[in-house]
Amino acid sequence: MKQSFEKEVKTFRALGAQSGMIGYYGCYESTNESGQPTYGILLEYADFDLNGAIHNEEPPVSPDEIRSFYESMHEVAATLTNIHHLDIEGQKYDL
Image (cartoon, rainbow, N blue to C red; front, side):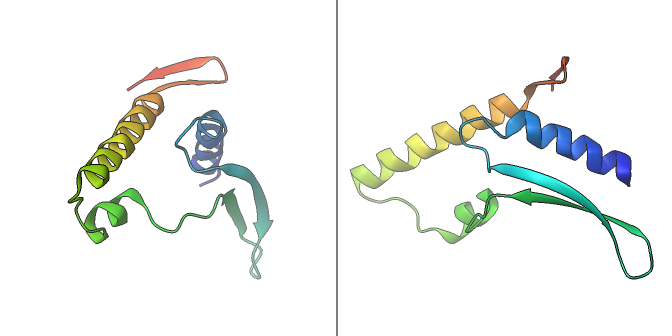
């Protein structure tokens, strides 16, 4: 569990400053009432995720809405490209 947490923290640190990514604010370790370790990651608040945006938003109709939609999708594609080409603590990941 702790190794997974540490990997996720490293990934968020590597991604946090990139445009289009939800902000990473920090992490913490604690223990619950029974003495078991717990881990938390503090992220920027988001009203919805990409899946929710795609399924819950009305499709664009006007030329301005269509242009705005495709500009937003271009940002999403650029962010996904950045996610798949990471350098975490000198280790390069090309997925």
